[in-house]
Length: 132
Image (cartoon, rainbow, N blue to C red; front, top):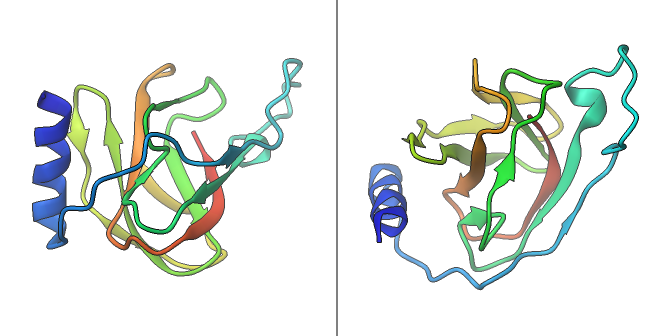
């Protein structure tokens, strides 16, 4: 279970406690259209997230993938949140305080198609936007 060990190590680094994540979390995406113009920007193609109460991960049960529109991974929560990004096969990056209503870059120079998910220090419900 290498993925479990990676998450456990990330959790220990953040000083949290282990919580079992449910198999799925609700997700909606906005701005993800098939025909993207050259004027499209990373944040212009942002998705929305809803991390349910009681879990640390978003999304739970699967990974997101970076797009060709960004070379970094950003998050904009509706409330202040400590959050890290975990890249498939590369592990979790350091946790950062993402301020409410402000874009926070969690990883830079990430290849298109890289799988990732977010790791939140808190198990409180969280909503906002992400771009990658």
